[in-house]
Length: 145
Image (cartoon, rainbow, N blue to C red; front, side, top):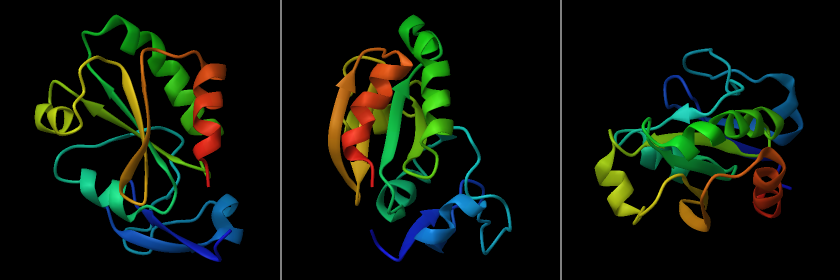
C-alpha cells in the first residue's frame, strides 16, 4: 500500500494528502478543517463529480438513483451502511439522475439503481439493480484499495 493517499474533502472539495497510517485517526481537511470521513455517501453533482472521481486515490462507489425509484429507496439504507462499514477503504457517493441527467447520460445509465466503481478516474465495475448489504459489500470488496 502507498505511504499516503489523496482524499477529496466532502465539504469543500479540497484535495488532501493523508498518510495511510492515519486513515483511521479521523483526519480533517487541511483547508476547511472538517472531517474527511463523514460516515455517509456524498451527494455529487456536475460541478464536483470530476474532482471526486479523478482526485481520490480510494475507489469511489457511485449510486445512480432517483427519488421516485422503489428499488433505489430499498437499497439506500444498505448503501449508507456500506459507506459506514467501508469508510476508510472506499468513498461512497450518490448521483440523483433526475437532477444530473447529463451525468447519467455520460455514463449510459439505462436503469436505476446502477452502481459504478471508479478508480484513478476510470470506471472499473458496474452493477445494475438493488443489492442487499451482504451482496453489495461482496461486490465492492475485490475493488477496494
